[in-house]
Image (tube, rainbow, N blue to C red; front, side, top):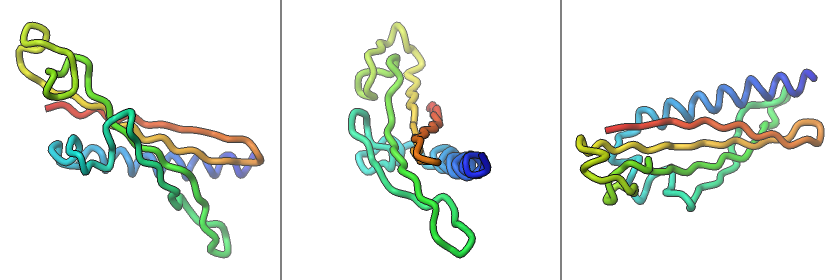
Length: 118
């Protein structure tokens, strides 16, 4: 139980960092082809260090990132909205970060979704 509780804290802290990164990234960078959050169905998967054991060995997890357009975005922004349904021409994107890890032989997944609008 102690390992599970520690992993909850570590993964929550890592996903808080992901939320902050996605929130402060310039919008133009978030939606670019070089974005750290690729356009779904593409995704990026990276093994990340989320902490250290006593003695210095890294605690690792798998991080998957991708982004999705809001369905009401105009077609140039990946949606199927129209000027009738989106007269202000707002553009919204969901940046998703999913972290996967293992404790005592069981797999766990935790996700955060960051909504960005302009």
